[in-house]
Image (tube, rainbow, N blue to C red):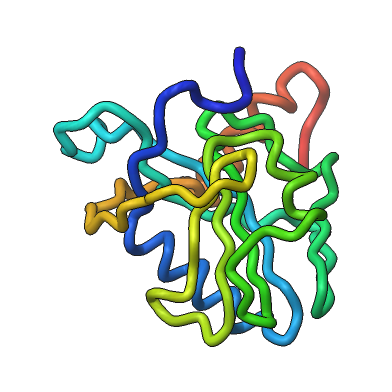
Length: 169
């Protein structure tokens, strides 16, 4: 199984970009960093082949300051929907630094957001650091039911695990 998708990244969902812009502004004057995850365009009712960035993952343990952000590699999920990275430059410079280029090896697209974090204060790059076009797409994102369970579901699962091991409390 490959960690990064092989299809071309054709765009970013407007909601995902807005989230990253707000997170970058909230982190200012420190850098913000996240990882990008995508969905097959056909699953979003787009009649094109490729991947649309739909999520910005915030990685636990990320450390940042005004000139860098570091993700703990042990916390990066092994995700087949991974598409690249996104981070901010509080100084507003929309080009990758040498340190950025060293981290661009994986993923199809890397986005840099610059202060003042408006809708046009970002650029996308390929893994070599070359600027690339990335459409902002107004798509309806599927609802993910990450916490789609109740206390009754938890109790039932605990009972199943506890069967044959005595009572649980």
